Length: 261
Image (cartoon, rainbow, N blue to C red; front, side, top):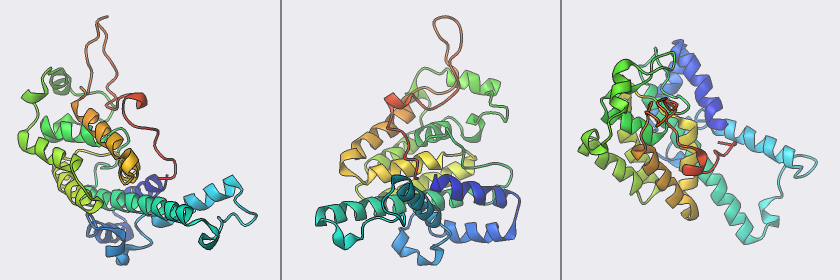
């Protein structure tokens, strides 16, 4: 929610060429691939205020206390305090990374939205491997004739550029969040050149869960499935066509996106 609010607001204004939004994106994209504590100059514009508002509403909804605040850290057991701090950091880092990467992605693009729901990381990389921007759907949601033909190609190895595949593998094998952010930045630059969008709300949720050792394998598995599953319209045995939606059912990928992010 915080990521969608921040990007949705800025994306609309930037595409209208509003000077304040143009200046904000310039500051945000310089922070892409860097952590929150390394970029204090963008505090307050990188989505963290939106995240704080979401946290406040969640506390009020849970009835934490009459003032809508949580118990002070000093009253918590050390384990609880540590768990809360790690959760807070993970959400902040995820929103910050998603918003700054989007700002880099949207740079100099006014006639198209680079944040677009449904375009998972694997799907975007797969589209890039298939030939870049031509893999995007038409404005009415229907694939171009050439796209219909390309999406029916049965063999991934015939389509996937080896250099690009290795870049995607490098994302999956990252061993620290800093490393992951830098490697995502490299791919986002390629997506920008090809004008292929990305679902930054989904990415923020995955980045948050990636920071948990217990959930990291599931995020990696989801990325792999997003890449290797066939996208676009596929012929069915009954002679019809499946939906052009790229994202596999939730049961086949990861858990439902965290509403706070």
